[in-house]
Image (cartoon, rainbow, N blue to C red; front, side, top):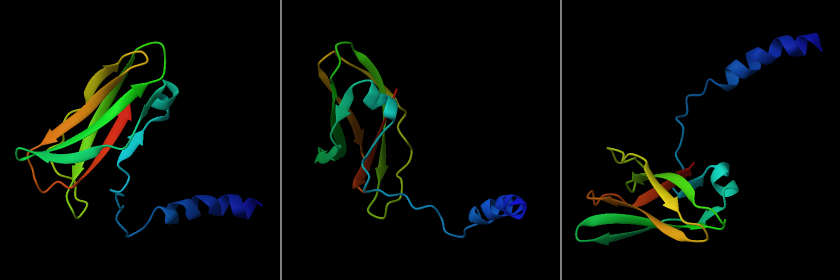
Length: 122
């Protein structure tokens, strides 16, 4: 048992040594912190369309509670290869009314953008 405990830190350090770069899964278009769900906020995955030379992403946030909820969100844009398009937009803040909804939107002039990820947090 003692040998196992001595070898455990070595095992963890070796597990952290990988030559593979982390891969971003751009097919996951919605990320919500658990606190957002606990606050009664639900939403669908964002949709992307093009209008007047701009890419626009939207998602409707619904509040299931009897009190308004302040939600922060940020959109991350990606090209066809999964590379993030910079510069990032700053996080936005909206108040979702009690038993109501609001649109969380982002607009980008870079037409190479093809995918988007919406990150919601309190």
